[in-house]
Image: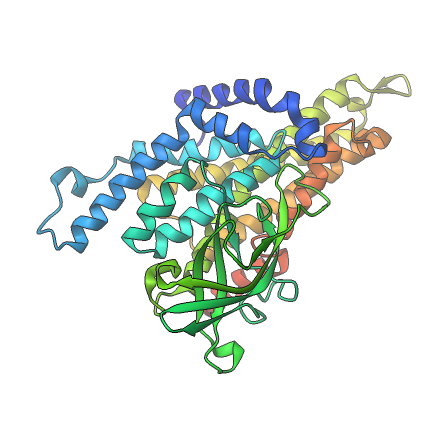
Length: 415
């Protein structure tokens, strides 16, 4: 794939019109007024039928799983053929275009949306039982229910599994959960929470099994904090979770078995997050470039537009190089989706590493190009720069991405 098709451009233009009408006028409230993004996201889902399409696709997949579990002799011919390459590419583009367009104005909304639809629902779809999928996934895909994926702890950081202290202990047929989580996207408002912890059997904490449980808002013993104040992504509420002797049945254990590979499931979730960062970075870079070009044409210093100065031209040229590179990675994602060959974890890490650095570098240069104005909240590059920074931190820091890439090249099974 070398360019957006006419259909992709039409989809993109439709999203742009929606964002201009529904998101842009409310940026101040979303960013600084503590207005949660859920109503706007639900309206977007309804306007474009996103939730309906996702639920339909989910039910088709679930029916295939049920048939396989029931020992069906064979799949229908149309299921064997699967979707065409063109349809697969369009589906991938439909997922990426809204990310890019929303990130022109409100990257936090993508984080809020992605955690529900891709991470929380994805974790249950990947390892859950059929009953768990039917019970929890559809409402997450439509954002009727808000989801949170809870792995990070106050003392863990990049060593998410090794330093994990949250525990599950067997108590008859139930489990007793204890622990705390921090930096949890949508933690303050989540209706459905995937809580990741270790099975405490009295053994060494580093040797314990990693389990995932599905919790409901209001579960006795579960406390969800108020939103935390943070540097960027203000439109995506982030909070803490505290669990004190939370009792759950086995039906809340994802997969309903302690043998389910929750550690590998979490790695799959990281892969999804890292791939999404590329599209987010592209949206941020595109908007920084658009704003910088306009400013370079209209801002006059020393008797001429600053765009006529070579140092400003150099900044603009580097921004365009970053934009082209990010767009090409997005195109590669779409092309690979059409062949059914998604990025490996190391490839996703490489994409995220470059994308996060590109978004941060371009947004900083945009602030510099705007000078004093770029440091002021009235000019959007200030917000985009704050929002870009987290791309180098969440879903694994830059340092973790480097380790993942290098270990893969060296033949080591990286965490």
